[in-house]
Length: 280
Image 1 (cartoon, rainbow, N blue to C red):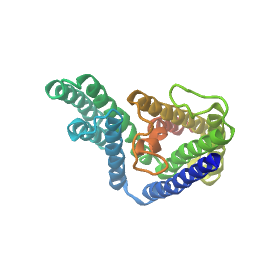
Image 2 (cartoon, rainbow, N blue to C red; image 1 turned 90 degrees about the vertical axis):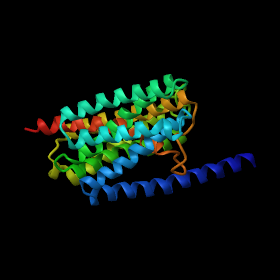
Image 3 (spheres, rainbow, N blue to C red; image 1 turned 45 degrees about the vertical axis):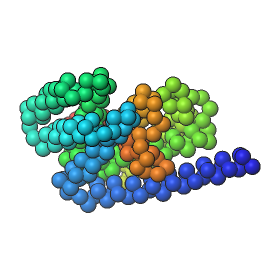
Image 4 (tube, rainbow, N blue to C red; image 1 turned 60 degrees about the horizontal axis):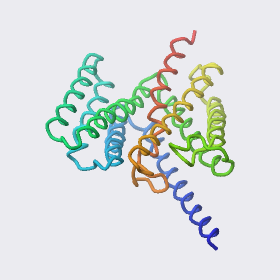
């Protein structure tokens, strides 16, 4: 009886995860192919703001006086990185760190140690890394490339989750995430690459990547995504939380949904840029 109830509960969780995962995916796909540059940046702003808030929530610092400045600075860093010159971007990064240190000295003496490092971490982890989505969009054939990035991350996450559920035996990093397994990671990795190779059929002639370069981009992106997933697990472990939030039923918070993407996006951008510059 107890086993039956547990199986039913797992089915409910899987159903929620499937439905809301599909809805989230549809929103992202529509954003990639229908929105212009500024409109897509607005989507990035939403992701950045929610991610910063959840980072502070993980450490029980979710009152506005803690996260409002890092949110503003994260968005400002992303804006200057995307739209303005490198010198202005570097100045804004310096200004952000200066203001964060000043804020913690002036206002949060009791929480200065914890708040100071989360402030700085959130600006780079959320604001800077997420902004690479728009950098990818700005590349030649950027919409297709951005779609490839999401396909790689989604396929890796989905197949790792179900591969671990059905075949998982050996723990991957038990101290960080007890449910992640070696079998799940390998399943996610292999099927993500296979899914990407199927997607290559539709963009090979349009993009011009060789099989080697396409595979290299896919492999490095998937590995980066897995590290990004573990990085968020590390943050949650330090903060003593199971999920980053409750925004997406069956998934947790927005960070739980895009954790792989946060490190995968810059990796994908630079590896793709390398092969674009060395096509000939």
